[in-house]
Length: 414
View 1 (cartoon, rainbow, N blue to C red):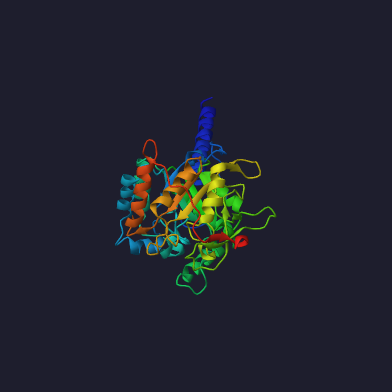
View 2 (tube, one colour):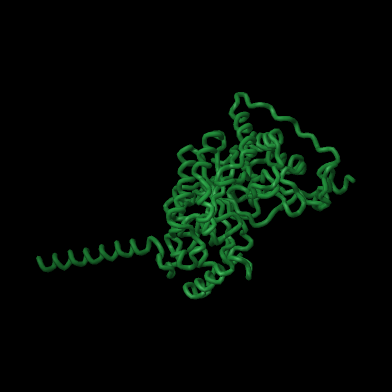
């Protein structure tokens, strides 16, 4: 009896040890860059088709943080934490902020250094900042969360293969290829998802959503990429920027803006973007404006006559009736998305009208504000402060009604 009891106890002890060991080893992938099991672990929380409800009627701003070696360089003269504190102090009514997972338009430079799944610095040291400087993005997020603001991370999904051959960073692309060829049997999509997962796990509990850029150049399958993020937190609110929809006339032909006014020196005709869901993954629309390189100014009158009224009329929509999607717009406040030295194109009155026209009716919008040494440019902050002032008045100040600029017309109205 005693011998049998001892044998039973040993069996239970060995089994328990095995279970604990398996559990611990299966929680995270290998830190040295070898393959994880490849399985996406399900969570107890289920995906909620209403994930973007917190974003409804919210207006927000952008504070981009540099990534990789660029962050180590700019951190010597920039103070993003002070910039975040200034935004919190001056703009209490701004409900959300878009900040950075990756450097703007650079899918291979990350704001964090340590990754739960792979030693990214071992692939190429320029891809990550120093351990000291990875604290910057964590501090920035913490400042916003303590102020009650929701945090969305910009994530360029193209991966290191987006780098052009022969460019200054082409050695990163070569190192990345060598890594996924040797460690992932050439499966770049799986290697990329594993890297993103390792950082998403570190951001878990700190952020509320992701704005996924450049999805058309994503290595691998988009559904698997989204599932990777949702495996960390099914409640994340996600927007995917992969393609665009534009307004059409009664014949189904695209509507083009011919002139933006009597002083319009750009002769390029451009389509007017329409914010509707274009995939089954998004909880809110990416809201990217008509590409700036196609002749459309960020404050186009076409948006005031078509894009914004459409958002106001139906702030919530769906993709093929499957789930609710919130209409959201992201407007550059300058001539270029994140270049602080370019011309400011919005004035207070138009900016306030854009903000009110969208949020009053339940849709959402974000200003693509820029940074200089980690802080919002003063001329932009001046506009944002005035918007905040008017948004917090009871009742809110009326905005000046829209009037089409003199000399502005569509192509068929010449």
